[in-house]
Length: 399
Image: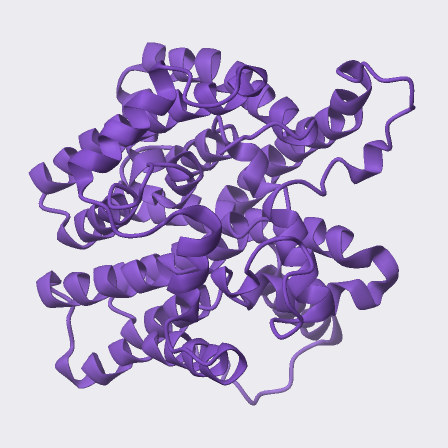
């Protein structure tokens, strides 16, 4: 029997069925797969919970006579500074009360663009974090599944653990964590797959968002040097993340007259001058145990204790990565920890844990192998996430 050749005319019903099949294949390219759909489901549930707290917390904890404006609950702490950059730029003094050169331009630029939708700068920031956290959650799931391909439904579990992190409110607020992860997670997945050009582009985009991009670029170089998939022809790509960093430094030189205006702003506004690690730890212990701050700011003392816990978690994670010989990821976590323990205090490390994809994948490994540990994590993490969210939305210091 002679087989039908490709150009041979076919009956109309077969041509119609073939057209439907091709259309279906084309649509599937643009629709999320099962793992992405499950991750997006967890994203939607957790975002709904955080938005409920954003509306409720200002009402529940208001002791004043004025009815609180619950829609201003998102405008807290660093959001003021991002809003000021989006609105006024870097050359208009300190409209938010702090040196704005301390913040990289990626998020404020997008907030300014999103404000053109008529939702304001803060609303634009909330929208950006919502989209970015969804993208990052999907790629965290894919990265986790790539690292542990034989574990069923493993990827969405990692995404869920990340979404329910104690400091997960910063994945919804107009902060840099969600946007940075939306570039960093797919960038690292590309590196693990040996797609170095794509990885370098994504890390360069991450470097426009926060200074952590410098540490991520360093980790990418270590990953390249130790990877079995390295391709020396792609080595020049690894210089790409330096471009946005040097570009931002050059811009600040024009505006403020110093190549190191970013570091000077950090020192002026947040006491992030170089400090020996043991001195930094001493200052942090004092703040966490001896009431270093006024009695009416016990939220600061509570948060410094959380910073010490985050430091301990980071050191345990670093040891685990070194034991697994995950050199690139160890470089990423280790360099981040080093940056935080060489400031006057160790603070904001709690938020930085959101950037450590090995932490959330490692917790998913524990939950997969010991389900009771997964249940224990959620039993602790979800109440802490509520506490952190309430603290943030009512103006307490939340790290």
